[in-house]
Structures are given as structure tokens and as C-alpha cells.
Length: 149
Image (cartoon, rainbow, N blue to C red):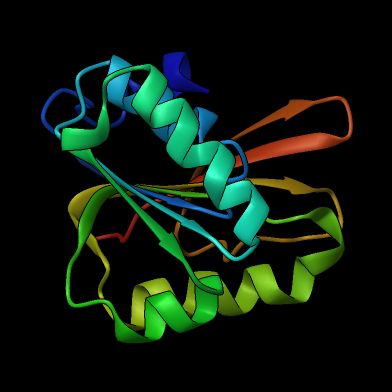
């Protein structure tokens, strides 16, 4: 994913939003590649503890914010925007994925020139007007979206 992403957006110095963070591996990888900061959003309290532990173990706490809230609630209230937004919900949330992507664009949460990267199943169809690239890995698809000027 990051090898594809590096040709589309500068990771060095970027602000990153990792939605449905899970263990935090995607946001942590972005930080290890030079992102300036990452916000990790995860609804499950136990999983948030894992994210915080992983961040602390790697001495990245000064560059990371971990938020324990549902993604939709976070997106509805955040007053920031990001260079790179990762969306990796559980596959059974395909309808939610469409709502989340719509909310990101509606609230202008991705900076001009920024990218939204979605990991999803074939059942989710991203909005074609924003789609700039897709890569398939078995039953998993990575879609890269960007607001067109």
C-alpha cells in the first residue's frame, strides 16, 4: 500500500488519519515513513489499549493521538483535516464505508492534494468521480480517492 501511495502523495511531514485503527499498524507505518502526526480512531476499548501500547513501545507517543470513539462520531465533530486518510472498516460494514467516505468529502477532512486510501471487499464500490487508482490483492481491494480539481 505505501509503495503505491508514495507516488501519489508525500508521506514525509504528512498528517495522517487512521480510521478503524485496529492495532494501529497502518498509522504507525506512516509515522515510521516520516509522517509528522497520526490520529488513530478506534471504537473498541480493548483495541485502543493495544494501539496505545504499540505506539508507546515504538516511542511515537509525541506524534500520535488515539481516540476511543465510533468513526462516524469522530468525523462529524473533528475540526481538522489530513493529508492521508486510511479507511479500513470490517468488510461487513460496506454501507458504513460509503457513508464514511461521503462524510470525509462533505466535511472537507482531506486536504487539497490529499488522498483517501480504502481497504475493502469487492462488494463496496467507491465513488468513481474520486477514484484515481485501484489495486486488487485476492478478495481485498485498495482504492485511492482524491478530490478532482
